[in-house]
Amino acid sequence: MSDSSPEVVNVGLLVSRSTRLYRDRVAVRSADRSMTYGELEARSNRLVNALLGLGLRRGDRVGVYLPNCPEIVELELACFKAAFVKAPMNSRLSPVEAGAMVDNSESSVVLTSSQRAEACRPHIKGEAPRFIFIDKAADGMPSYESLLAAASDRFEPVRVRRDDLAVLHYTSGSSGVLKAAMQTFGNRLAQMRKFLVQGDAQRCGDIIGLVGPITHASGMQIMPTLASGATIRVFSSFEPQRYMAEMKAERVTHTFLVPTMINMLLSELQGRYKPMPDLKRLSYGAAPMAPARVLQAMDVFGPVLSQGYGAGETTSGVCGLTIDDHLRARAVMPDRLASCGRPYVECMVDVVDAEGAIVDAGEMGEIVVSGPDVFAGYWRAPELTAEVLKDGRYHTGDIARVDDEGYIYIVDRVKDMVISGGF
Image (tube, rainbow, N blue to C red; front, side, top):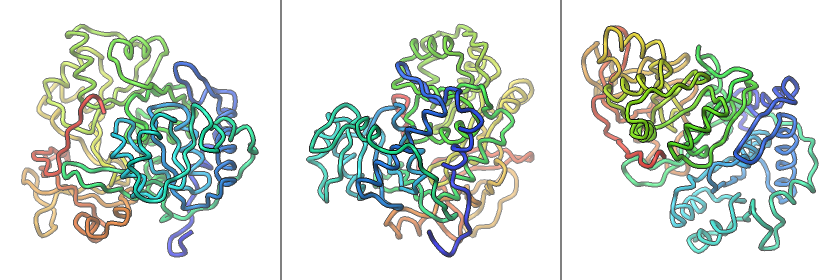
């Protein structure tokens, strides 16, 4: 641990505490599997001990290159408990891109499938990691399940400090330059607080449908959900008709979609109202969405939409347009649906001029963010870090204005990126 920052609670410990309250409740469910909180606790502990048995130590990087599945949830929890650094890779990346991330992170272990490893291995230029396959044993390594079966199910989460590295969150934006935002334990704890204090946050008994890659933005909901006693429903892929049917049948209460996904759902439904009586919140973000489309989505899904604005560098959302904001906008101020909302608690979000001074309402400037959820910089890229992290403030590159009530409107995205295929 770094001696220069205060000790904070390990977010993995918070989930372990949840187990004492919700041991027999379902923690994670997929199309073909279901795990209680007690089972998740035991399996994540076994995974920690198995990785320690392979020689890993705190601070070592652990990669994962898989589509959505319960094993990713187990790995996330295990990494937090042992202070391994999670280095996730979007399953839609090419083998060449995945190989570059393995090299960049210097991952000691990568959890993946045999087919993905075979495709990725030729593109790793540095020292090859140990691959753990979820589908079979190979290369002298037992399978994932064999490793867990041979390990102890007892482990006490390690003590951590605020600035200890927890996650390498890879992002390239429009530049195409490979870079990983270093998210600390303090960042992830702040992110958990941010999620849990929202008025429409998940609660015990709720079911959270995660269909976007849980290696990235959608996965930010894993730890807050488990800390609250709710259930994670992991969807391995997004097919509009099936997704809606399963959402309704399994009584999903909360979900997060990017605008591309919502547009696909609206196209499938052709404007018809789709009653989902259990759905409490449909969050969207990661790309702009036209107000007319938002209104159409409200017609189709009802008063459940909320929006978030943020980035990997801010450890998820820092501003939000709430469900109530959407309803008020619809009634008296439709243009407000173009806003990304107002800052969340603890998030300091300003719009500033070229000298760093806060601009007046209505004037344009750059969005800068400070607070406990701002990342520690880019992994092994001090020059890139210096470009965006100045005096503890993250310069987003997004140009915006603020209205008289504090709502932020993005008018130009200097660092725009294309969100396609729902991911």
